[in-house]
Length: 178
Length: 327
Image (cartoon, rainbow over the protein chains, first blue to last red):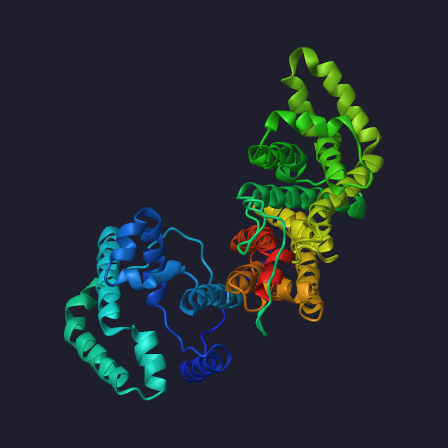
């Protein structure tokens, strides 16, 4: 197989062209579905659905999570869940068509740290991001991209806070990649 | 009666069958059986076609062993069906009669006799080297096995044509079985049998593409899989159009796929993930010569299973009784 196939990756897109295309995707989702792009509420809904299977009474009575299952509603029956599934499918097509798809157990990490440190840091970062996204009612996709596109003041404040937070913490984190 | 009020009276109140919430008799067992049945039928069709088309046996050991794999796979499907039965021990009664007008009777006999076809197909699929390996380890039954291998070789062509016919039969009967049930509008369409057949063919190809195959087998099955998926996509569009432009019952059935609560999963997982994405990947594999990714067959299998799950569940949710109540 290896001798007859072309595994040479295609060059990356121009970032401005990719940004413009992403803006068109955002426009299309508003026109077709009435919703913008987002992502962080999908794992939240997945977690609530799992909780609803394990402990339905607790989930329904919970002040925050209970709203997702109120009236017997299925928390997974939501635009954001299917949008994220679509992002996954789109990612597969994009990676495969450009020759960048790799099914490898190798962990992408900086040269000075082990895989365990990298995975622990990623897991901790994911928890902080997930918690913060719920507090802010959106992540960089839902707030910065979608809210920013419709000039929501809160979203622009969020975006400035994200950049401020990133510049403040990057000196401590970047050593993981050097 | 006050103007504007419509009173709906019907005399049937069978629990789990009639009423506003529809019938919920079949659980996970039936979709699992329909999926496995379609997949093994598809693999049978593709293997028979491969040999008839290229006039040579598959060279990879995996493809040679597929007919033998189909036996236990179908066994798992039939086990699911047996679990669904209220009286599993009464299943033998199916095989005391044959009703030519009953798709279920046809299906019962087909899924029984197709096992013999797989054995005959499997005997002739093995290469001479594999046959010798088996004979060297078969002790006192080596003579009988030698005879069986020779028979499998001597009647190869009629066996392959029989396998092709049985594969089509098993693949199509599941859709026919549901399609003839007039009282369940989402099932009552002539598109369902060819839809289940083509979905079964793409699932059968996906099953084999997860195995280590030769270059020729892999390239052939990727192309045939793509053709089956393209036809399946057209059939789905035609089915939805025929529903939304049909009678009130048809339109209620169409609501399952356009606007109902099954719509997101149907279009995202069955059509998007199970057909369009694998079709695009197959297109890139062919046009850009990209190495095959096993993610594509996995998506096809998930899509094929979800299709049957949604069709079975949606059909049970819809009935003329619930349609009348909705009005």
